[in-house]
Length: 149
Image (cartoon, rainbow, N blue to C red; front, top):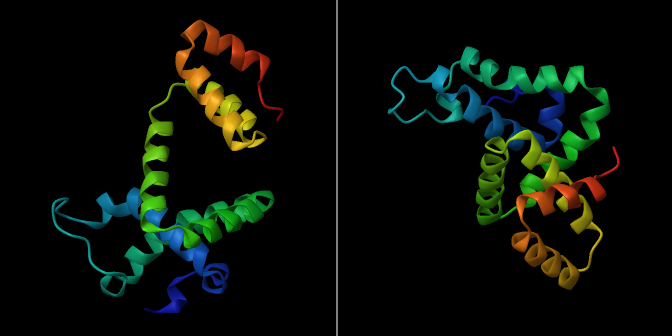
């Protein structure tokens, strides 16, 4: 694999490279394949233009959002440490998030924000309580426990 195809920061940080490829391949894959049913080639078989197409969005985001660089780097490093099963669960969670409406996302932000500060047994109790709530009760709980931005 030609390392010149990666931005300098991605060459120095293997996790960032992996995260970029996983996230961007899902976005750019339809544009890369003439036949959507055909398997995509290995990185080494991609043309320089195809490689650039995959990397450009990450480069643009990295350069446009300097304040987010530590967060992006942390996510890439966490992704590298994940097992295949953990990565699969993360993908499923991202898909669920994409299909939530704005109100559901606000509720989940409040719920996850609260759960982060709880020990495991209290987390389990809150999950059970949440599942038993009506939509109106969830909305009220979310307003009372909205995370601080």
